[in-house]
Image (cartoon, rainbow, N blue to C red; front, side, top):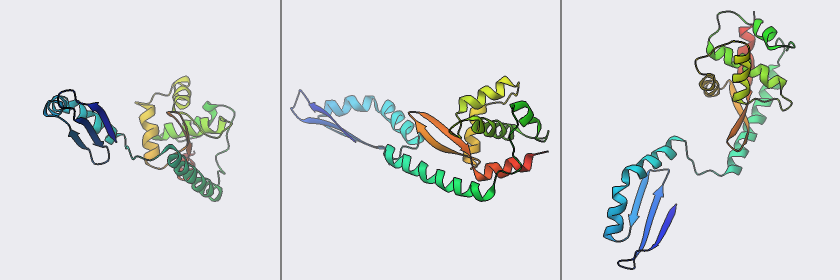
Length: 186
Protein backbone atom coordinates (compact mmCIF):
# COMPACT_ATOMS: atom_id res chain seq x y z
CA UNK A 1 0.00 0.00 0.00
CA UNK A 2 1.43 3.33 -0.92
CA UNK A 3 0.19 6.70 0.21
CA UNK A 4 1.49 9.71 -1.68
CA UNK A 5 1.10 12.85 0.39
CA UNK A 6 1.99 15.12 -2.51
CA UNK A 7 4.80 17.59 -2.90
CA UNK A 8 6.55 18.67 0.27
CA UNK A 9 6.46 22.44 0.34
CA UNK A 10 10.05 23.10 1.47
CA UNK A 11 12.00 21.14 -1.10
CA UNK A 12 9.45 20.13 -3.73
CA UNK A 13 10.19 16.44 -3.07
CA UNK A 14 7.34 13.97 -3.03
CA UNK A 15 6.60 12.54 0.38
CA UNK A 16 5.61 8.86 0.54
CA UNK A 17 4.54 6.44 3.21
CA UNK A 18 4.60 2.75 2.33
CA UNK A 19 3.13 0.19 4.73
CA UNK A 20 3.40 -3.57 4.25
CA UNK A 21 0.66 -4.99 6.49
CA UNK A 22 1.80 -8.58 6.08
CA UNK A 23 5.36 -7.99 7.27
CA UNK A 24 4.65 -4.97 9.48
CA UNK A 25 7.18 -2.81 7.62
CA UNK A 26 6.75 0.96 7.44
CA UNK A 27 8.78 3.00 4.95
CA UNK A 28 8.88 6.80 5.01
CA UNK A 29 10.32 8.85 2.16
CA UNK A 30 10.56 12.61 1.81
CA UNK A 31 12.27 15.60 3.29
CA UNK A 32 13.93 15.40 6.68
CA UNK A 33 11.17 17.46 8.29
CA UNK A 34 8.45 15.21 6.78
CA UNK A 35 10.17 12.04 7.99
CA UNK A 36 10.79 13.61 11.42
CA UNK A 37 7.11 14.57 11.67
CA UNK A 38 6.04 11.03 10.84
CA UNK A 39 8.50 9.55 13.35
CA UNK A 40 6.77 11.57 16.05
CA UNK A 41 3.62 9.58 15.20
CA UNK A 42 5.38 6.22 14.84
CA UNK A 43 3.64 4.79 17.94
CA UNK A 44 0.25 5.47 16.37
CA UNK A 45 1.40 3.98 13.05
CA UNK A 46 2.79 0.89 14.83
CA UNK A 47 -0.47 0.39 16.76
CA UNK A 48 -2.44 0.62 13.53
CA UNK A 49 -0.20 -1.91 11.76
CA UNK A 50 -0.38 -4.25 14.78
CA UNK A 51 -4.18 -3.93 14.88
CA UNK A 52 -4.47 -4.87 11.22
CA UNK A 53 -2.02 -7.75 11.64
CA UNK A 54 -3.92 -9.10 14.67
CA UNK A 55 -7.18 -9.06 12.72
CA UNK A 56 -5.59 -11.58 10.34
CA UNK A 57 -5.25 -9.12 7.47
CA UNK A 58 -4.36 -11.37 4.59
CA UNK A 59 -4.83 -9.07 1.66
CA UNK A 60 -7.39 -11.49 0.26
CA UNK A 61 -10.30 -10.06 -1.62
CA UNK A 62 -13.94 -10.41 -0.61
CA UNK A 63 -14.44 -12.76 -3.56
CA UNK A 64 -11.62 -15.04 -2.36
CA UNK A 65 -13.12 -15.06 1.14
CA UNK A 66 -16.57 -15.93 -0.26
CA UNK A 67 -15.05 -18.75 -2.32
CA UNK A 68 -13.27 -20.15 0.75
CA UNK A 69 -16.52 -20.03 2.75
CA UNK A 70 -18.46 -21.71 -0.10
CA UNK A 71 -15.87 -24.51 -0.31
CA UNK A 72 -16.06 -25.07 3.45
CA UNK A 73 -19.88 -25.14 3.36
CA UNK A 74 -19.83 -27.73 0.57
CA UNK A 75 -17.30 -29.89 2.42
CA UNK A 76 -19.32 -29.75 5.67
CA UNK A 77 -22.58 -30.55 3.88
CA UNK A 78 -20.95 -33.69 2.44
CA UNK A 79 -19.77 -34.71 5.93
CA UNK A 80 -23.21 -34.01 7.40
CA UNK A 81 -24.96 -36.14 4.81
CA UNK A 82 -22.81 -39.14 5.79
CA UNK A 83 -22.89 -38.41 9.56
CA UNK A 84 -26.65 -37.97 9.57
CA UNK A 85 -28.67 -36.07 12.10
CA UNK A 86 -30.65 -39.02 13.43
CA UNK A 87 -31.10 -38.79 17.18
CA UNK A 88 -31.38 -35.03 17.03
CA UNK A 89 -35.07 -34.66 16.35
CA UNK A 90 -36.12 -31.10 17.06
CA UNK A 91 -39.03 -30.58 19.49
CA UNK A 92 -41.19 -27.47 19.23
CA UNK A 93 -39.58 -25.43 22.00
CA UNK A 94 -36.07 -24.63 23.12
CA UNK A 95 -36.86 -25.77 26.68
CA UNK A 96 -37.82 -29.26 25.49
CA UNK A 97 -34.74 -29.38 23.28
CA UNK A 98 -32.38 -28.29 26.06
CA UNK A 99 -33.93 -30.75 28.53
CA UNK A 100 -32.96 -33.63 26.21
CA UNK A 101 -29.28 -33.18 27.10
CA UNK A 102 -27.26 -34.37 30.09
CA UNK A 103 -27.02 -32.18 33.21
CA UNK A 104 -23.20 -32.25 33.39
CA UNK A 105 -22.56 -30.09 30.32
CA UNK A 106 -20.28 -27.05 30.23
CA UNK A 107 -20.84 -23.56 28.79
CA UNK A 108 -19.46 -24.53 25.37
CA UNK A 109 -21.91 -27.43 25.18
CA UNK A 110 -24.79 -25.15 26.19
CA UNK A 111 -23.79 -22.65 23.50
CA UNK A 112 -23.64 -25.43 20.88
CA UNK A 113 -27.05 -26.78 21.94
CA UNK A 114 -28.59 -23.30 21.64
CA UNK A 115 -26.77 -22.63 18.35
CA UNK A 116 -28.10 -25.82 16.77
CA UNK A 117 -31.66 -25.07 17.89
CA UNK A 118 -31.48 -21.52 16.47
CA UNK A 119 -29.97 -22.88 13.25
CA UNK A 120 -32.79 -25.38 12.79
CA UNK A 121 -35.41 -22.66 13.35
CA UNK A 122 -33.87 -20.54 10.57
CA UNK A 123 -35.13 -20.75 7.00
CA UNK A 124 -31.49 -20.47 5.86
CA UNK A 125 -30.33 -23.23 8.24
CA UNK A 126 -27.76 -20.96 9.88
CA UNK A 127 -27.48 -18.65 12.88
CA UNK A 128 -26.30 -15.29 14.10
CA UNK A 129 -24.57 -14.89 17.45
CA UNK A 130 -27.22 -12.42 18.61
CA UNK A 131 -29.98 -15.00 18.08
CA UNK A 132 -28.14 -17.58 20.19
CA UNK A 133 -27.54 -14.99 22.93
CA UNK A 134 -31.24 -14.09 22.91
CA UNK A 135 -32.37 -17.72 23.07
CA UNK A 136 -30.09 -18.46 26.03
CA UNK A 137 -31.11 -15.28 27.85
CA UNK A 138 -34.83 -15.86 27.22
CA UNK A 139 -34.53 -19.25 28.94
CA UNK A 140 -32.49 -18.04 31.90
CA UNK A 141 -29.32 -19.86 30.83
CA UNK A 142 -26.37 -17.75 31.84
CA UNK A 143 -23.04 -18.21 30.13
CA UNK A 144 -19.97 -16.19 31.06
CA UNK A 145 -19.63 -14.90 27.49
CA UNK A 146 -21.82 -16.51 24.82
CA UNK A 147 -20.04 -14.73 21.95
CA UNK A 148 -16.67 -16.04 23.09
CA UNK A 149 -18.16 -19.51 23.50
CA UNK A 150 -19.38 -19.47 19.89
CA UNK A 151 -15.96 -18.32 18.65
CA UNK A 152 -14.34 -21.15 20.62
CA UNK A 153 -16.78 -23.63 19.08
CA UNK A 154 -15.73 -22.36 15.68
CA UNK A 155 -12.06 -22.78 16.61
CA UNK A 156 -12.80 -26.35 17.73
CA UNK A 157 -14.47 -26.93 14.33
CA UNK A 158 -17.88 -27.60 15.91
CA UNK A 159 -19.33 -24.53 14.13
CA UNK A 160 -18.32 -23.00 10.82
CA UNK A 161 -19.10 -19.81 8.94
CA UNK A 162 -21.62 -20.18 6.11
CA UNK A 163 -21.81 -16.62 4.83
CA UNK A 164 -21.04 -13.03 5.62
CA UNK A 165 -23.27 -10.02 5.09
CA UNK A 166 -21.25 -6.89 5.73
CA UNK A 167 -19.61 -7.55 9.08
CA UNK A 168 -22.35 -9.96 10.18
CA UNK A 169 -21.23 -13.60 10.12
CA UNK A 170 -23.65 -16.50 9.85
CA UNK A 171 -22.65 -19.92 11.19
CA UNK A 172 -23.84 -23.51 11.23
CA UNK A 173 -23.06 -26.63 13.25
CA UNK A 174 -20.48 -28.81 11.52
CA UNK A 175 -20.63 -32.60 11.20
CA UNK A 176 -18.30 -32.78 14.23
CA UNK A 177 -20.67 -30.43 16.07
CA UNK A 178 -23.66 -32.65 15.26
CA UNK A 179 -21.76 -35.74 16.43
CA UNK A 180 -20.80 -33.95 19.64
CA UNK A 181 -24.45 -33.03 20.26
CA UNK A 182 -25.41 -36.69 19.80
CA UNK A 183 -22.88 -37.65 22.47
CA UNK A 184 -24.47 -35.18 24.92
CA UNK A 185 -28.03 -36.57 24.64
CA UNK A 186 -29.65 -38.17 27.68
